[in-house]
Amino acid sequence: MLWISLAVAIGAAAFLFLTSGPIPCHAKRWSLKPEGAVDTAGGRTTIQLRLRLMQLGRHRVRPAMVLGLVLLLIPSWPGALADQQIAPDPVAEGIRRRVEVRELGIGLASDTERIFASDAVPRFYLQRTFRPAWSASNRPLPIAATVVKALQGATEEGLDPSDYHLARIRSLMAIAGRRGPVDVETLVDLDLMLTDAFLVYGAHLLAGRVNPETIDPEWHANRREMDFAQFLERAVQSGDPAGALRSLLPEQEGYHRLKQALNHYRAIAAQGGWQGIEDGPSVAAGQRDQRIPSLQRRLALTGDLKIASVTDPMLMDEQLTVGLKQFQSRHGLDSDGVLGAATLAALNIPVEERIRQIALNLERWRWLPQDLGDRHIVVNIAAFELEVFEGKRPVLTMPVIVGRPYRRTPVFSSVLSYLVFSPYWHVPHSLAIQDQLPMQQRDPEYFRRTGMRVFDGWGAAASEVDPSTIDWTQVGHQAFRYRLRQDPGPANALGGVKFMFPNKHSVYLHDTPARDLFAKSQRDFSSGCIRVGNAAGLADYLLRDTPPWDGAAVRQAMNAGVERTVPLASRLPVHILYWTAWANEDGSIHFRRDLYGRDDRLAAALFRSPS
Image (cartoon, rainbow, N blue to C red):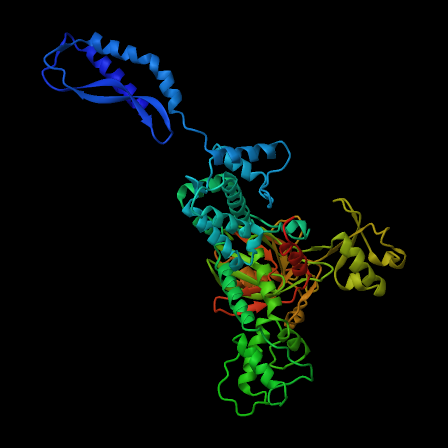
């Protein structure tokens, strides 16, 4: 109000100066007059300028009179300005002191809780000059309650609300919600706790609670990043911080279907879970066994069996056999409808373990980029499966063979850019020593029979050596100086085509002559690269818009015996992933064995209390 009054006064003076001659005043006019007033909110006396309606009568007012009035007021402005300054907000001052303590190295913390976002919290308050975000007029704002509700929902994401100060925040909210004055330190604590909770929970939703590369060097994640201090400021200004948190969730339907699966299995657990089925001999269709009633109840709990009329409660009838096959399919087992040892072991895994498994894979979803690509390829190592997606739907599915447990296929993302038909296999040095050398030592004709050529050295000028001239029994690992290259042909380990997406792991997709291995339910036989079950079909799909590469041309190139590189007109993102639990569009929930022990390492980190 002070600045407005001053502006009016100066404007009036300027107008009168620019107006020639005296101005007659025959009526009521607005004039300016200083007046003492009490600022009741601040409890202090201030000088304010107010417009007063005065009866001037039939006098004449000259510009000099107004200018004189303004000049008389000037000495009072500094005092008025000083009195108009806003009194310090005690909560803001408390936050400032805490932040300054942190900057001195003592540690930013409340009396009982540690601040985890120790960099983002000070930056957030510095950019808002320490103003509290979650309270005003000594009371929590409504947005504080919405954040508390959002933190409670962390369980639905497979996360633990206790990691986000929930108990402490609830206690502070209860204290701050009481009638009467609220202690300043309570509001300071509440603001810091809510800010830290938002920042930490938001970071976990955006990029996962665990950095996978800290627990598994073979896992390269494309985790999302952002400036969370600015993100929180925008969320507070919007009035919907809970909505801002929801915006950080993975957008993919697979994540949200898996969340529904988590709720479903928790509901089963709340009802007591399922009882184990006793060991015993295998039971096939048409056979009777005293464990059949237990099997029926177990399959009914997970929706694999809808029990209708039962004529013989001890009989493995057709209905039960179909239900058992569905269970086996969901768990990556041979779908033979036989209650054997592997199926029994899967049936007896407790529901709590399945809940844990789902939570682990929700975390893995949070490690992925928000956009997987409109068209993209996903290889699920644990499921031994490749899928090509267009939009949200798989349009091509095939089995794959992945690395052995001691030669594990890594997890990463890249971009498929070209194909190589009738490829040479340049044998990695480690595999030449560990795999090829022992075979040649056992069978002196192995290299010649498989089209393996031997070169002395690794340079472009390395000369070829006749393998029969070398006494391979005398060649040790340390003295192995040879480079091995397998010619294209029926015996070539890469088959008729390889699919290239450059990466630091030197991993790629390729064909294979060992077709019989795809019939097995567990397919971990490679040395790290991924063998695809329908290489010709995948090549057809990738080159469908690249004339003249129709099906006949693809197959001819695969069998030509002459290496040929074909670039893709449209590159495709490739995501090599490791899902041990997922939910399909039809609502079926799938589980796989933890092939490489990666679930256990993740669980040890994900469920560990913050330090």
